[in-house]
View 1 (cartoon, one colour):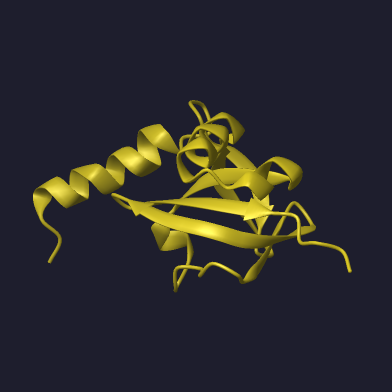
View 2 (cartoon, one colour):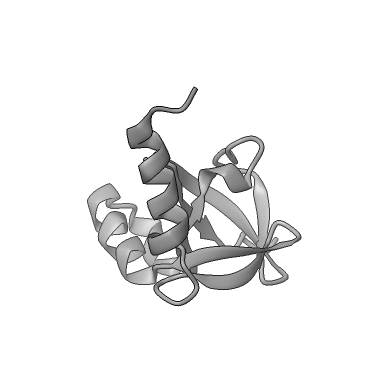
Length: 109
């Protein structure tokens, strides 16, 4: 049974954070239209913390999505599409019912 606090947090995720009138945007993610928040500024900040020297040369993006949108949290290294373009998952962090997913364009060989 979900605690009252967790229920309130889940409602805030849907009604405030991912609300289409507030921050959320609809994008095609993994073959479905989903509400996400693209945050390339936060991606740059987190990239500085990780200090991946190759990150500057790779096209990386970060987005937030409700964890419940996925049956299983995606792992680093798997491919995922965003708006019809293939990306490789670099990092996934769960933050109170929200996934912060960093993706990059895979290297062409």
